[in-house]
Amino acid sequence: MISRAVAIVLSANLVLCNNCYWNDGSSYQLFSSKTPYDTVRGDIRDYPVPENCSAVTVWLLNRHGNRNPGDDDTDAMKVIAGLKDEIVDSFNAGKSKLCAQDVDDFKRWKWNETMEVSQSYLTGTGYEELYNIGRRIKERYPHLLKGSQDDFYFRTTNEQRTVTSSMAFVHGLTENSNLSLVVDGPWPRDDVIRPYENCDRYQKEVKYSQESSDQLDAYYKSPEYVAVQNNVQNRLGIPTQLSADDIYTFYDLCRYYRSWDPQLRSPWCSVFTKEDLVVLEYKDDVRHYYRNGYGSWISVSLGGPAVKDLYESMEASIQGNGKNLIAYFSHDTMIEMTACAMGLFKDNELFGATRNPERLWRSSVVGAFAANIMAVLNRCETSGQQSYKVQLFLNEKPIDLCPLEGCEWKDFREKFQSFSTANLDFCI
Ligand SMILES: *[C@@H]1O[C@H](CO)[C@@H](O)[C@H](O)[C@H]1NC(C)=O
Ligand SMILES: *[C@@H]1O[C@H](CO)[C@@H](O)[C@H](O)[C@H]1NC(C)=O
Ligand SMILES: *[C@@H]1O[C@H](CO)[C@@H](O)[C@H](O)[C@H]1NC(C)=O
Image (cartoon, rainbow, N blue to C red; front, side, top):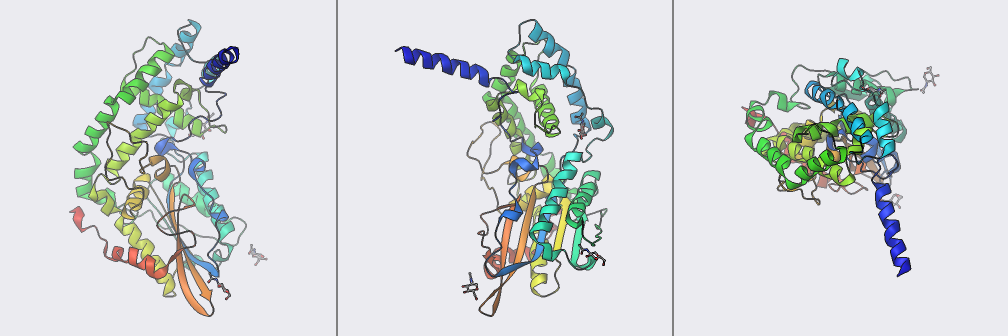
């Protein structure tokens, strides 16, 4: 009996201790479209090249790295950041459930002015994410880093964050080599890596669709989300009444600021429990599913031209006029549309009102900062016979579509040849 009582007391203490953010090392790491690349990536250097094979062409579609928030989000964050003193006062008045150290961290916290003067710009963290992807590819496939500009093709979309990401990638890729490579674009209109921009049908029927906003409303009204809202209000004990939107702005302060901190911590995250973070992660999954994903056949079709480019790059290489490396720098919208065209992470349905913990569609994975889809064509030689094998990676991890030892070219062609006819005729 006595030992049981002790055990109960001990576990009660443990629970209290776990309620502090600052010393809880295992805090939840997935922050949907603001997840740092390192949290979800594998490492292309750790996977074997198929036996008796050598890589001849690498094709890569990359999201830009970590960036600053855009203007609306920055404005909203600045308003919520103004609650800092109220949060501290509430603690001093004994009305807060935050831990003392977490409140200390709030006191020390400062609004970051760079964010306001460079909205949506790539950050130093984002630069490193892309630089390191380039560096790892160089280390994995040093024999491909030969030749001249003609053996390479890179293109970016028309934004500071993607242009700078492409420069960071080329920096990592060519450092300490004699290669000097340039990036094509941005093109004023890019129907391969940003086709949705000029697709009227997408802009009208998908981007701001009624369904999408209904699903998001349902998410904000779900019992889970309302519980998070009440929990945060109670935990902080502040007089200001927090709206559903305000709670999400706390989440933005948490996930942006932590992504710039070497220890991946921000006091703004301390207002949430791990369970709260799991619920908050779901919003972008809903939003992206209906805007960029399986929620609309139009979004899925918009990934077609990129997969066509992938397939044709491999085919050209087999014909003897391929490139060593092709890389594009684009946006989460594009990575997600391309993944959908390939049939990855497919849930047949997803509802704002009810979160399915087993869902395959995860913006923390497919829409993370610097998320990427990579295809590697290998030329193989077995007893004098030449053949080709394709490996596919997402965030430098193998994906089910092809086994790690590679798809045989004929199987790959069977799956992907149909994309040769992909077009955007449906946009009009
Ligand atoms: C301010 O934000 C930028 C990103 O805009 C980040 O690189 C920098 O480290 C931040 N500074 C501080 C002190 O957190
Ligand atoms: C770069 O070029 C110089 C001069 O041609 C040569 O000595 C050096 O080995 C080259 N470096 C690399 C990494 O290829
Ligand atoms: C690789 O080549 C060797 C020598 O030709 C052969 O014995 C072996 O079976 C090959 N492996 C595969 C997987 O084809």
